[in-house]
Length: 400
Image 1 (tube, rainbow, N blue to C red):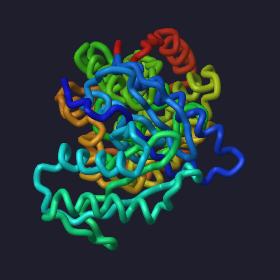
Image 2 (cartoon, helix red, strand yellow):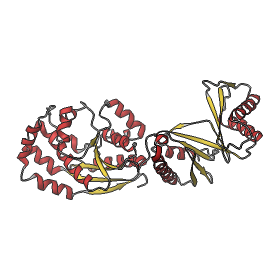
Image 3 (cartoon, helix red, strand yellow):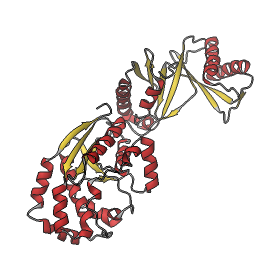
Image 4 (cartoon, rainbow, N blue to C red):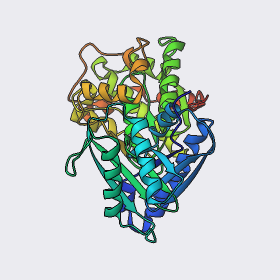
């Protein structure tokens, strides 16, 4: 079991605090997500909102590492502070608690520090500055090797005077962004690469619930390729909540394009039909207002400005591309941070890499592409209909 000498966590948020009259909507959404995520840990926490903070207080023992890891996946939380609750609210009780706190949490006392008191309880007999001075003096008496630095201390000891006294010194970085459920829903075109999972994460970080669609190409892709995408969705669901993953068999459409269209246009035309099918799914999904892709300008032939323009013309829904200005290494770095990299690097091919032209067009002309697509007239409509009928929906979540 992890160390659970801390009885509570104080969660900080930033962007939500400037939302004006709508602030309560974001705070309520964040509180809801905190309760959902803490429930996953199996520990019993009471969650409450107090003056721009969310407090999570445990009623029993818990695995601290597990709880912190879960809290770090909540969009909207910028800081996670493990808190000690001081039972004796008198200044002597606070001083004694501070000495014990430093003693238990810092083996090496040779650091600079500053006490920072927040006096939310205005009835408390001492001012914030007086508490700062008294606690600082007690710490210097107990640990002479410590030194005060009011400008750039190595350690901030925070004391919050409320109905009870809360004490903490560490702020663990949270996921940031906005809480889920505050900005509708979008549909991610998910493949097995590095890019699309990161794109989904970044849009969802702005408060967007997410579903996904994967274009499968049996027998040219294996069941392992499909499972790879399911596994990626499962990692994403730690942050995004449950994802409805639509799996579409795309093989017949790819074969028709391969047989009837110029080979240097294969990727562009294939992407256009993916967009059409994704839009169909999005239109049938409540509160779904856009499509998400992992494209970045110039990364491959289908991601030049002209190629993206040609791709977008196939659908009316807005397409969100949060990685548009990223280079590959930045995307890989982010995938490592969110936990998708080890899955994305697995060698199982998806349908995007099977029918790849040796010399793909990089500056497609929309009229020429549409003329090429006209060769599919009479068959493509039925193929799209059949592809949509193959839709296999799997609800993917962290626990399933």
